[in-house]
Image 1 (cartoon, rainbow, N blue to C red):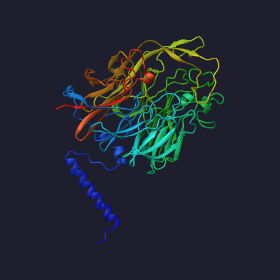
Image 2: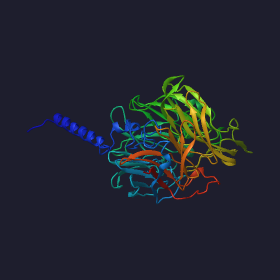
Image 3: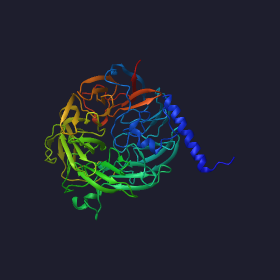
Image 4: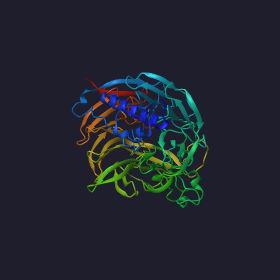
Length: 549
């Protein structure tokens, strides 16, 4: 019997729908062989997978998982732990799909684990040249491939089942001063074409920041957006002379996307040279800024920007990705976007216009109006203070934004001359020396007022991100290795456990084979190292927690 192509498709879709219903009724997550556009767009509504760095395109680290509650969290125990063969700072955000977990190490190793047991399935190891510091924040997954950005500027596709290399391209324009730390983000553009988003890490080395869309089939370049305006473009006159050519403004944290509005939000890094603004007079757009880009066409177009710190001389950029959420202001629901900077400020903006709603000081601030001098001067926070790259999370039940931050001061010295040397830091001064005590906070900010609902103080700097559950819990990690859970309303610490190494990544939550897990990466403290850390160089580890019966 002849069946037409269109009829065959209808029958196939009906069969898939019936299977999905049966699996759902049995409590088994129904996955396609590969994540679809629907899976990516609706990622926040399920706990059966975690396929984006923060779980969803909004970079709001929340979970739909409801098993772990304030009432039973005392039963949360270690389910498994996996020690990586590559030690170092562990900043990875695990990607979980169809029972597999993919994580990265500081030197770009990729590990595929059985998500239920933590057992290694395969490992990809190809240690690259390290320009400055070792860091990798995870992988992307699409079309049966796992994608990796490397410390020597390569974009690599691996077979998700075997770990074998599928293709390998040099994605950066200048491998001498440019590398990747961001987890590649798959996204389907308005025209239906899939791309991989990856941002260049080159700002502190005298480059111009940019984000690139690559074709996931072969790594070819689809489009690119540069963060420093060239002559003839709006904003170029905010740079004196030709200083814009080495202006920095790297998009470090990742790309936040509103698929329905075809908008992308980026936080851009500090201007260069660091610690000396004399050779780049002006506000230096779009450094230290959040930008909103219209991505409905073939090339991104700037819609609005908000500059956190004009003419930054202290490396106080917003390192986290913007966080997009629907919050309440004056009793009305508004689409908002929030981010913090390393100067210790947290800003909430109208996502449609960039209008500032609230700006809240989170940390002790001193000396910001004076640039580093030749004799030296004090300023707070230090370059590792304020809000760092893990960002936070928004809780719709309490209209609260949770974000960690750090108090840390420094003594700064500027140089009389600024010299660019390829492959080295482009500095106008020495990296500041840490001065005085270093402490941290976990901040619960009321979105309606911009005032704290509560704060929890730590004896060490705090950059462990946040994960919110619908049951009234918020998780964060500490430099001392503890993973903590707080009551979202009261700020009471309800649970903690020691992972054995410093936490400088954010937790995720996922359900595998019917078991809800909270997963966290830990390792050495890296750039966040302070003398008070008890175990600064312990093994890089992935730890999974679940409720005991």
